[in-house]
Length: 302
Image 1 (cartoon, rainbow, N blue to C red):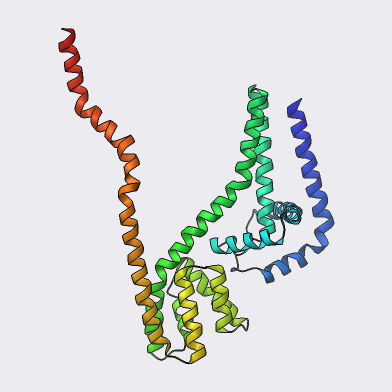
Image 2: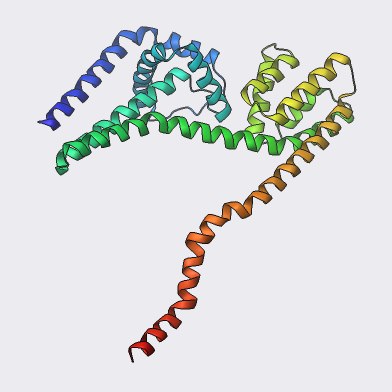
């Protein structure tokens, strides 16, 4: 009986999704165009055979995301947008991400209910499992995004001094700051290279250097990026030599990176204490004292 109810619920969800797609199909092209204008990122590959299936899932995610966003609020949606940009998901809107979270939550809950119904689990375990699956489906993707954004921002902080050294060389060679950024974007890869490409795209759209750097700071708000952006904006405003400013920033960032490495080195003995006591010491005692204990027991019994 429970299995038929779950299958009926799944069919109802699919029917609503297909009906929504049929109603919104004439406006689909306009919505996609507006979303591309409002989002960040680069052009993807063409001719993907899974595109029709993805478009259906995207339409369902957009519909569910709009419903959830109306309950969440604009402040929470803006915070989610900032976290997605920090994680590098430029083309994923907050509402679509909310929709994917809702879809994953429903699928995990239905999947556990189906497994429990076929394996004869007690009703209490079914309720607890559904609650755990719901929490995992809703909060799991958000934690993954936060973890990815943290690693990405740490990598940007680590690679920024090398970018500044490259900018110093090109600026002192006679290039302007915008041209130096363009040269650096061809040589820097990873998250920092993606941010530089976005800065150049915004400059090509007509934004000033100050506006593009402030947008970069909004996407990757770290201490090193904050110092870099503020120094460049002040140098452009006051007319100070950018080369000397960049040298000072590079020395400051390297000192900060050295201090952070020393701090991590000092935390290493404390972090290794737990595996040392509970994993390494028992195995060591077993290997060293085990034969002696067995010989003592044999001698005692003899």
